[in-house]
Length: 315
Length: 315
Image (tube, rainbow over the protein chains, first blue to last red):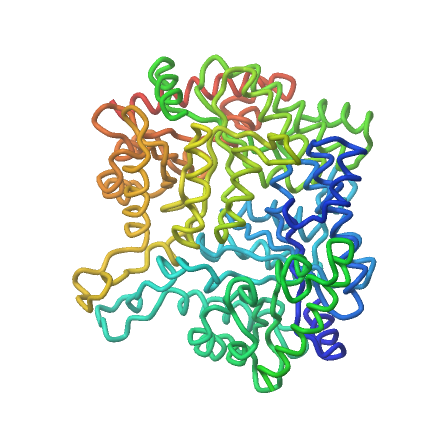
């Protein structure tokens, strides 16, 4: 799947992923009105609204981008009905030829991580039958539990030819609270050799990545926030074969010119996410002319602008 | 909710939580047969099987224990249908008077953590209506993203009088890979003052806990694995007001006598989880006489034995 993703990025000249993170305040009134008329102000109504909203955006941008990244929390907030909307969104995006990166940030002890991997990337055995659950192409994984929490995901990816992005340095303001803490080398008391935790995690990701290579890149990638370009410079070197999934562009403050350190010299190796900046573009002054009715066209215009901003920033 | 949990533990003399972590290999044949007859070897069939299996166990043990801890991954593995079984299980346990600790290990940037908190502990706004999703009493949270990933959970808990258990030192063999790494004090190069990351996280939990107190304990608790009693000794002191949720007892290797350091001198402050050891007791030699038909009675006998093992171990 990393080979397919890389090819798509090259062909479209767009190292871009659109974050399908629907919240009710982004969904245009006309869509909410129709969904609530049909299902009431219920979880089902909310799920229908976000699904229709997503569909409009996907239809408008699917020829421009290689991948989407639905953030599962935005669906889980609406309970089981929201999860159904998540599943429908994933299936629809795949139908449209998009690579789907599920931003699920799961991670647990071995047997539990295996269950997550099975549900989101693999197949569950039911009697003698194998059944697919959410069937993502990639998933994000939280590394706090260490190797035995990550390896079951890797195993399922190997079997299914899918991939992971492991959290290394996240985009949020307080990510440094634990991730930036300086860690002594193992078995040493040499404080001058201490390095931030995110580098230690990055090294582990590089190890896993080297063992699980696609053609030019590994199917084990990393998450590094657009808001930390200085750290990205170092992490890019530590993890040369990992694709970096870059959140935090746009609404969280990252800009095109900050993105250069995330890419390798081949112009590849990173894929930049924008969520609000695209899916709620119609609520921004720059795209106000599209109005709520034109939210999908506004999203398309915002993708084109992002593509240009990144191209200018990197090359 | 922490007050209710503490009261229940005292009344039942059972600082025990049963992990409702159903996998197909634990579910007795007769239950699978009936579920598959009705729904086929499908996700729906699997979901029906785990729900019926759970129901049997809950009915058999609900008068003995204060709480259950469904591990959501075991439901997610069966897709949306599995999530429906999760929701039914949570609702049924609450009907039976049990406190429900959802082992969901979520955690993300602020706005995303808020969506998780809303979906699992709070209420989602749909139009002018507030809707409840999974409606857990407690949830487990992954701290890797720092304060702004945890605080939205705390905010929802404040509003809903619910609680959290934050991962500090997990029970799995490779938990030390990152959690045990020695961290320098902030702004210092004094290697002799370096401490393991789990202590740093524990201190943060203690801070949050102090700000959000119930009557005698805080509604912000911690997860510390039964497999690491030496570390628990220190963490118990660092987080005096936090309940410790203790996984890793039984199948993962923890024993009653190892549990003393997890408790405070008042005999409270910890709640010990057993999953397989209870729900699949009928598959162990000690409870083989119950057979698959008697799986629920075997679970009851295993709860009674666990209660005794912990009482002997602690007091």
